[in-house]
Image (cartoon, rainbow, N blue to C red; front, side, top):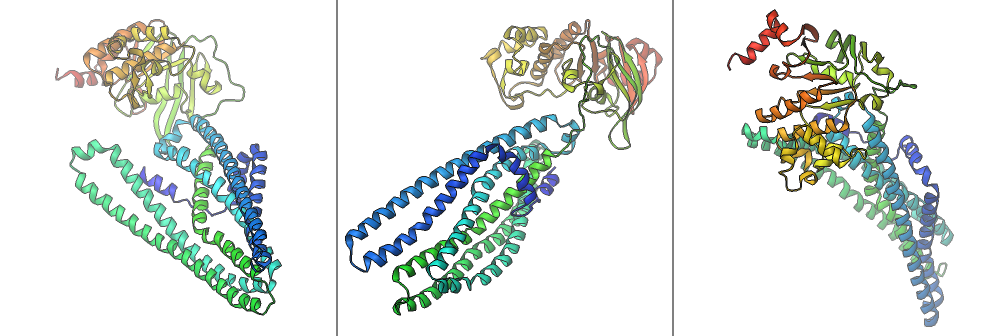
Length: 592
């Protein structure tokens, strides 16, 4: 898992990628008016900022040198007014751009979450959860830098540099040409430094991904770490990764720290040339003192965006990399798609048929091999066999979490591939071996925010599966808060809640149980078995279990071995055959 995350995080991309920006524009276009206002405010702010040095020029040439204090006071008031206007424009521009960024991130997160929910289970088989969470949170947040402090800032900087260049030539073209003599040197340094900084940035991101992957893996498996006394060994590994990361960060810091002073030296060289040549022009009377001061102020503002280039370059590169990862996720295609004209499952009897089904998760690694059987409406059938025999795959195929490679899965004679997934699954109730509970309340976990399930129906479902016995003992009862993944509840209690959830949704054709009683104590198993016996009446029921005691009273048992059906019949019939089922039964009970 960590390796996958590391590889994914090595994507850096360019600091500016037209292809990615073009796709982002699709999310920005609904807010065209807001973008136009933001750009207008940005240009107005830059224009106001450019007026400051020129006001200084007028104040020096007209009023300072002539000793006109009243006129100087007026220029000071004008300068203060310009500052206030600039403050207001900058505030509005920052706010408008910030709102734009939040709206785009909201739309993008909404689309990503909807897309992630539509992706097939095969996608989650090959993608760690941590990576997907990062895409929906950190990577989307990085786009805020791109929209507010990245591209917008670059537009403002570009306008400022162009505007200052025009003003410099207008003030004194000779000084402007002298200023631009240092630009080739600066461009050469920037090209060299950006290449080095890119390599350093890549090294830091790669090593940070290794640390994150190592930490996530060890925190998740902390019980194994402590059980096998691996703390010291793992600390040594982490210390090595941490030292490697620190070394890369220090090397990166060296180049980033060097870039600013180099730009400062080049700009200081330009200022020195201006003072030398411009001062001489002022002494000779060919240039006013105010023009020289304004020229120097414009020079400082000219190099300011260049000094900030390092931070902006990193922000843009990170945002572009995040954007590429986001669009890679959005470009993931759904393996399981609804047909253009799905067949509606309206009046369902519950007859299930697997017709010569072949299925594999990986190419040529067959989990099910030519499996055929039919389950009558209202019949209860148990599937047993060793781990890996293909029992759970039957449930996944029936619910159409995966599609068969060969053969058909039919419900009431309709191929499940011809139905809409939501319609199909609305008729199926599932209780898994590892019950999953969400943060919220007991009642919320039973109804899963389905408004059509009333409080009374929630209580009836809990009573039906005997979950009310422990719920009534909780301080908040049905409003008791459930912590993440049901922490604080026993496995049996979580299983009963999962069972109540299936009952509350009242599946019309079947209740599918996947090892529903395999991880509970004897008392709780008795409670579930009692609920199961009542629920199976009149419903098509699939029961999958390793423990044969839980399936002895079903109508039929199907034994799978290496993906094939090897035996079929009721409990007594299979025992009498003294075949594989009989051997499994003896293995489970020979020590009792």
